[in-house]
Image (cartoon, rainbow over all chains, first blue to last red; front, side):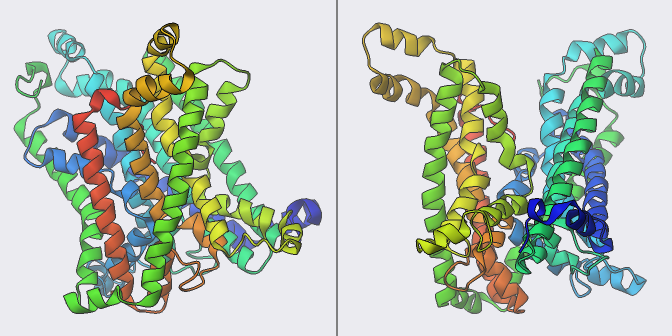
Length: 240
Length: 283
């Protein structure tokens, strides 16, 4: 029945340094990072396609980008668990190969890809829309190939927005709970995320343990977002 | 712009085809498949068992509780959002930027931590829990706790939509109204409110969607008491953990249907009133 400030630093440290806590934190931050990276790549492609190309169904797809924001996380969670379980639509396809997706860290990552998807697209879209056509025309007139224009002109212009979108997707994924716990299987030390560990500690009335895990999550998130923020302003300054 | 693409922007057709193909495939796999699966699983045994799931007493209680929570949390945050946006954009005061940062805070922290904060404050062993308990007031594991947690998590939506818009609109019209002798309320209802009505509706829409779907923060404070403190998302969890998949997906499909309506209304508002919205980035 102790809260961190009552239990003293020793207790806080013993909770934080517990292998199970460390495993959960590693999984939450690691899977969130990989998921944000995947969304950075595909989000950039999707944003590019939605802004630059016209094709039937474009506006409908554009509207659906926000689905992860609108769909309650628990709904997404049970649906993803059903799809990637060994007897599910996609899970069954991979089961004969000996690859299990649900109830492993891979499943956690898939859920985090779902919740983080809109951030990168919605960060890059307005920048691409505002990009003046003259800039690309000037590059072409000066003899740059299309590839060179994309790498040297468009890339630097969208880079700060890309980092911003990555940061938002990452921050959201670190704290995500509802969409993950169903597909994760929640095996301690293997597929148990940090927010779930907070819930478990609370259910044991270990307020100190819960708060300690929460504090570490906040501290590490803050540090990483600070680094990403610096990176973003560094890129923005260089691009100018 | 779409009609006359500058030659400098023209990509080779094969590249266009590949990129559109990748985008459509990714969206289909990551977004549309989970959405489709919700309805497919709900209808797995046909329509009758699906409809029967809604006749269950606990399911009805969960739906009623979710509507009640939204009916309390959304108006609270609409009023707060209006007041905060009004204060931030019409007046200069010390600590203004701190207030704006603070409004954003619930978006930056895990919903589980938002719930945790309330347990640490009002739980049986929290700061104020024992004192409130002697007065007969219980917060954690009650509807009160769920309302508090939902209100905290959905706090930024209306304010975030109104602040940038009202900043862009400035004070000129209000100042003119004041010069002509209108009092504060009259200015608000005849000048400010008509200027921001669609943005307000947009913020309320996003706020409502999140209030009805919130899971992490509510899961921590609710105690999951069937028929009493289980909102629709929590009821989905209870049913799923009991391997009652058809019923779980039935309730989930109702929430998914609501999500689709939200998306449709949101897209409509953005298309119709683009210049009257700040169209905040959703979170």
